[in-house]
Amino acid sequence: MVAVTCPSSQLGSTLEEVVEEVWNEVGGGRDEIRVLVEVLKACGLALEGNGLLRRTRDGDRIARSLRQDDRRTLGLALIRSGLMHDQARYLVESSTTLPSGDLTCEHRVVRTGAPQLLGMLDWWDIEPSSTLVIPRALAEEMSTVWALLPPTPETPTWVRERQEIGNRAEMYTVQRERRSASNSGNIAWVARDSASLGWDVEDREASPIRRIEVKGSRGDDPVFFFSDNEWRKANEHADTYEVHFWGRIDLSRSAASEYELLLTAGFPLVVRNIVAEVAAGRWVAVPTQWRISLAPAPPPPGAPPATLGGANP
Image (cartoon, rainbow, N blue to C red; front, side):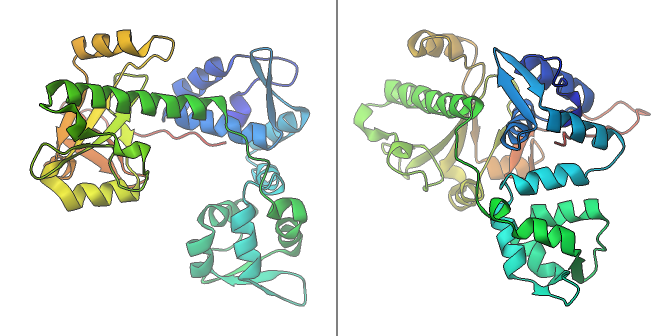
């Protein structure tokens, strides 16, 4: 969907215009759409310059194929870009080459080590049996040097901004907690020292210690993601684990002035024992990174069931 919506090589739109158009069409998360735009750019299918985003000529060609319901050209672009390098290597090294040049591999093996690549194989009408047979031409594509090497690392602007939003949210929680602590030194910003704990801030005045995981967003909606480790720690510490959600973060404002504005607006939203809240149905956790949001209000009697939209490259 993103590849088709992105303006052709002869036109151009701002990134945010493309994001809004895709979002209005299929829904999903705006950050997820930005990720897909970065994927297109990494594959050489889109480029951004002078504030405008447009497809390349290769992108135009693939958009035409997608309109004809042919995703194989997109799949080849993803493979050739090196974005699937680790999964392509895993699949090739876990397979057996037949005399015909085709590859065979156990479905369960590919599902374990190359799940996204396995999903793409459906674009080549490969039968999803217990033993996969991958045609020689596709196997050769996955074995090329450019398919097995990762692309040059580059941190997209949206990734840097998301990291800055996260850092600012953590800073606000530290400030809030230190204001109310009898000894500000007992509020530790532990995420500065380790990203592996499963929480960001500790209140060491409390007994037992309060562990605070902080989430930040540009928007109002309390939707955020947990890593497997964060969810595991939330289960492990339960009553002493809480979530602080800061919305409406605007990086164009100074942190000092924004902090007071957000407090006045009612932030942070504090959720104590998020696991119990999910179990009670007051929050919803979808295990795709543990996407957590408020439970929707029940539909009125007789209303048609809601559907969820998702954005594809």
